[in-house]
Figure (cartoon, helix red, strand yellow):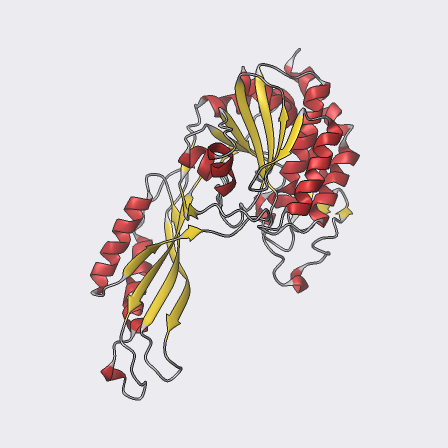
Length: 401
């Protein structure tokens, strides 16, 4: 079968499911599913997976929904997180965030782009795969994963370590505007704490102000940001103080403790160890003493399970010549009859676990544009759902060959 014939055939087949894709994504958007509150949307996905003919559908102990097709040697996973960030200021929205509005070929609402669109397209891509017998010696898992917005990769640490599913390849369906992405910067959350000595604010010289001590450290962190490593593909590492907390006996007492929250974005070659050393140096230059606190995520999932994970999310990049990237590029050409644009995400994804922690070859391809993620204009074109479903129908077979 020639390239043009394959392209026309899969795209036309996916076009047959335009209405079902639209309805499914609209339903998903209409179900509120903030992190740790995904139970109802997981149940809706389970219903759709069973409806379209998955071989097995189960919900694991953390609350992820796992749909399986096939029982072959090569294990392939296509992943979408199905939690969302909150709405924010509702006055900024032009539509009901949970209305699932469809207008002029676009689906609007919280999570439409990030990333329930990927979930909807995967389910119908799997349906097309079965109907067109695009099967091979592979086992495909379609995963609707929880708590990614709170803690990237937590779900995949659980799936690999506790469910015992370790894929050979992973496709992340976060929004890529139908481009192919091969990595992104990592990140780390930390705190720095200074201690002082409280006294009455009418005589501050009697005490040691922990806020003043911290202010000198903050100045060095601002300087540190300017000299962090740059990478020609991923871009520059960054560090920012995002929150500040203090302890004091009262409003008219000198603070005896001050803590800052730090967001550290990691480019290629930067690790937890390099971050800690840089912060130690910055504190030393400030002339102050402080404690660096590594943080853990310990929020219960909607099932009640607590699965503690450190808040270190490693950088990952797949070489453009790697097998997974090349096979994905070739599949794109086969489905769409044109050359793809290969790039990276600006934000982080569950790839920090699959690729960053477990070194599993990972690639990104998803409907919707990431510029709408977390915004009051959250949206996805229906055309993107159709095209992504066509791509997902063929990609597992091509990755397994």
